[in-house]
Image (cartoon, rainbow, N blue to C red; front, side):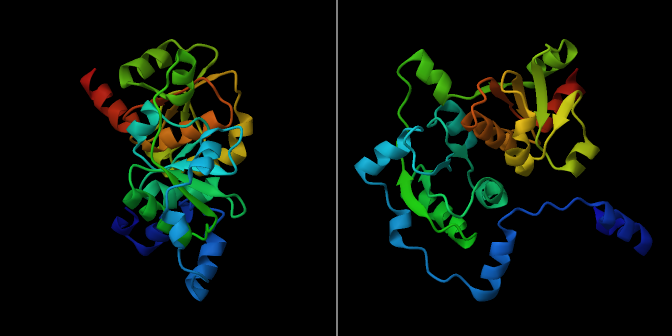
Amino acid sequence: PGYQCTSKKAFIERKLKENHYIAPYFSKMEQSNVTGMDTPLPPVACQKLAQDAQSAWQKSAERPGVLIDVRSHAQFRDCHYPGSLNLPGGLLSAYGGWFLDYSTPIALVADSHQQATESSEQLWRMGYQQISGYLTMVPKPDTIEAYHRQHVNAVTADKVDERIRAPRANWQLLDVRKQEEVENNEFDQAKHIYLGYLPEMCHQLDKSRHYTLACGSGKRATVAASYLLAQGFENVDVFIGSMQAWQSYQQGT
């Protein structure tokens, strides 16, 4: 930690080297912090979508906005609506501002009314006021094709190690951690794109390649995988445990 520096000069030098990420919504949030929100969160934002609206939001081709799945990462990987973005808990406020804009309607996929309400409140405080409501049911796939569209594969440390040792030409480990995390502990042969920069930098990635997403624990990697899948990347999986699992694996081999 920077506060453990032995001198004022060392502290200043350390702080100057820090990389601070400023999400696009920060300017709006700063204004809201000064003036306050114009309107309170309306009850409709925390209500289940009507049946006809649910049908439109469930189908990616007809979807009128961004569908955010605030259920757990494990639930999302197991089964989700194609094209939805996984941002549960604190990751919604930490990273939602990198993936959302103020003009596009938002709907949620949640486990419960309480979870939907808490997530809606997070979005509202960030200035996102076009919240249409929420869904709770994610139907299980009934065909192999549907399974592949609604499921995110996960890989363990031994599999990643195998891929690193004998890499295929079309495979890439993609690390979405912050720069300081990467500098402290690097993944061998990984390409680094900070999670928040993924929307503006995913054009640098090749949709024909196979990407394994990694972070510190697998949580942000799942967010990244959900975004890439929504952008049309088909061969994507998540390194479960990511750096935590990698370090444990390295110590045991």
